[in-house]
Length: 113
Image (cartoon, rainbow, N blue to C red; front, side, top):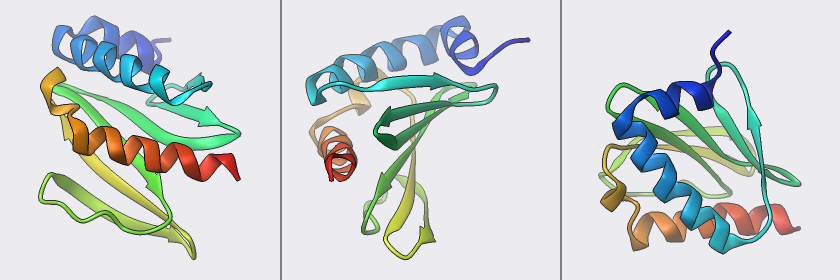
C-alpha cells in the first residue's frame, strides 16, 4: 500500500517542493511527521500542518487560530471556535517564500502552548 510520502517522492515536482518545505520546517524546531495514506501530518504536540500530494506539487493545510487572507489561498475553513484550516497549493520550491514561512511559524507557535 502506497502512503503519502511515497506519492510525494515519486513525483519530481512534489519531491522538490517537499524537500524545500522540510528545510523550512527544520528552522522552526522539533517536529514529527505522521505518514498517513493520503497525507502527512506535521506535528509538534499536535498537528499544525497537513501535506497532501498533488499531481503538480503539494497542497498545504496550515492550521491557525485566525483565518489567513491572501489570494494564494485556495480555501479557508473554520474547523472549531479557535482553529482554521488554510489551504495553499505549492507548485514550485520558490513559492515557499517569506510569506509562507511566516504562516508556518505562526502555525508552529500555536502548538507551543
